[in-house]
Image (cartoon, rainbow, N blue to C red; front, side, top):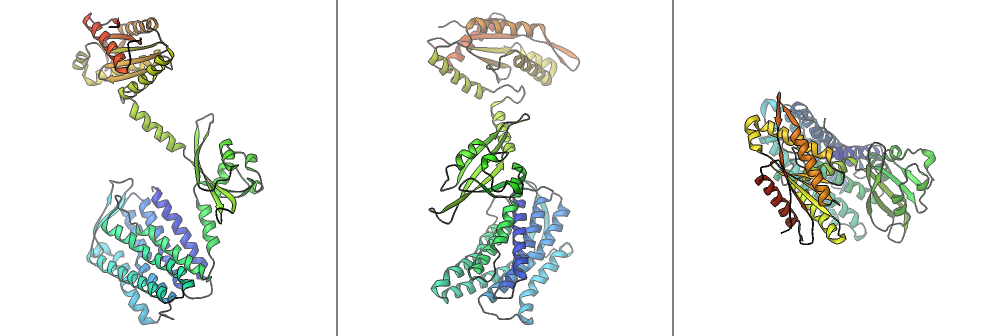
Amino acid sequence: MFFNPYAIILFVAALAILVLFFRSWGLEEVKGTREFSLLALACAIYAFFYALELSSTELNIVLIWSKLQYLGISFIAPAFLFFALKYTGRVKKFTFPWLLALLVIPIITFVLNLTNEYHGLIYRSSYLDLSGPFPILTFERGIWYWFHIVNISFSVILSNILFLLMWFGSKRNIRKQIAIIFIGSLLPWLGFIVYLTRAISINIDITAFILPLSAICFYYGLVRYRLFDIIPVARDLLFEALPDGALVFDLRLRLVDFNAAAKELFNLDEESIGKNLSELKRSWPKLLQNLQKPVEKYLSFELQEETSEKDHWFRADIIPLAEDINNLQGQMVIIKDITDQRFAEENLRLMATTDYLTGLRNRRFFTQITEKELKRSMRYKIPLSIITIDLDHFKKINDAYGHSGGDRVLIAFAELLKKRLRELDTAARLGGEEFSILLPDTAVEKALYLAEELRKTVESSKVRHDGALISYTISIGVATYHADIISVDGLLIEADRALYQAKENGRNCVVVAKPA
């Protein structure tokens, strides 16, 4: 199982809509409540099993969840129409002919889907598409699938028409509520069209995400008519189901409420209610500072927490709680652990600035840091030196020991640089067998001393590879910043000129660049 963000959203939606079903089913029968309950149940089943489908990675398991989805999918269309007919007053009671007419195609669809492997009328073929971030069931549609689609389209269109006619025939003071339900009846078209046309890059059924929104619109319209009250249940469920820590504070920064995730994150208990944020075990000065100045709009920022093991990063979102802009009653804080995200970003940054073979910096990063240090040297008149290095006759090493042997020599030399250099120095592999070292706050004498030490160490060392000992030497050019240098290119050119002279002098030597 692979619980990706899409599946988690559907699990939460299914759970919320299922609560709406249980709350509305047990209420006294009034216009549309029982039909709404059936629609909510069908949507919950659909969303739940589709979430399981998106979380599965094996085709046989995915197909099982796909079949079970049709417990909901097959009956969403009739439930949709049942609700529209009952809510708009077109039908007082559903007789057997009504039920037969509306349920015959959904029942056939459900049965055919269960037995699809014997006839292929729903799906001719199916496979897992592995090109996206997670496996997605992909299929070729069969002939009955299109009958199923026509039935859904007919039910939704008729429902749209019924709600629209009701709006035109209603008094002005209740048109707003009916408009909300009418909008809810239009929403499935968005997901339906996107899914059939495959307008998004990830081939997921967006309808499963849209239908819960329709149910919420229907529910809100019903609440406005005061037919049944399920707002607190849905809100409490979603508040507790949030994977991030959620805390509610009053204007005095006293804790009013928190969810399960915040309980674990802040080590809270029931006695924490009423305490000031500064009294909690995790208060974060930056969070306290931002909450002390109540915001009138959404505010987001990052928090850092240093520990003995590693740094942790969190994102804090502050949401004002107010009936209107002049009536702020408190603030909600959502805390999300983004440590993994920050480390992933850091790893990507390192990959973009690091040579994959040696682990040293690459040419791009070296040029950027050199430009920065050069500007500092020019401004404060402090020394700056560069050492440019070539491995002598590297092609012969590759020819004699293969590229794996050459790579082993490059890695060994890189390790030598890492051990020998200071923390403020930067070593880079510029390409092939060419390396460079940036030495901030270093005059030419110290740079020359380091270069000679490196040359001697390499000359006396050997690299072990496949039972053989590889000897190699290096040629080095040293350049130091002076008044005539006005750019990074100028400094690098002088170092390269000195390196070239070292090669001309017979290699395995150090040459210091002389100002032109």
